[in-house]
Amino acid sequence: MKTAIPSMAGLVRQWRVIDADGEVLGRVASKAAMVLMGKNKPSYTPFLDTGDHVIVVNADKIRLTGRKEEQKVYRRHSGYPGGLIETNVRTVRQTRPVKIIEDAIHGMLPKTKLGKQMYRKLKVYAGPKHPHQAQQPVEMAVSSPSK
Image (tube, rainbow, N blue to C red; front, side, top):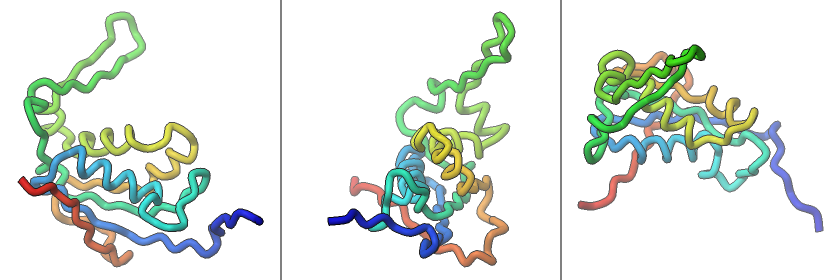
């Protein structure tokens, strides 16, 4: 019995829009990563990029739980001795709010060439508008648990 492998020729990629206004960062990131990888489709294959394009709007209105607003730290290094640069979420939200969501989603994707290919299908915008209306994106809800 042969294993059926989905063909990339018959693959149709949709465009999905996630509104991050008031949503929790981890829930938005995990939902977007799952769609980028294609795990929500029956044709999911681990070694093929079968995922859809994802547009995240209102990135500046994302919600963080607990005390992450003060405690979460983004680190980068200049490459020189003593060149560690630490920035908390509050500063990143003021200067570049898109980076918060991009980093969270990027961390949930595979760390391979295939993961980089999936990451290129992600578009994040700080405000409610995006320039991808021609692709006819479908609104996608992030399911929040009942409180």
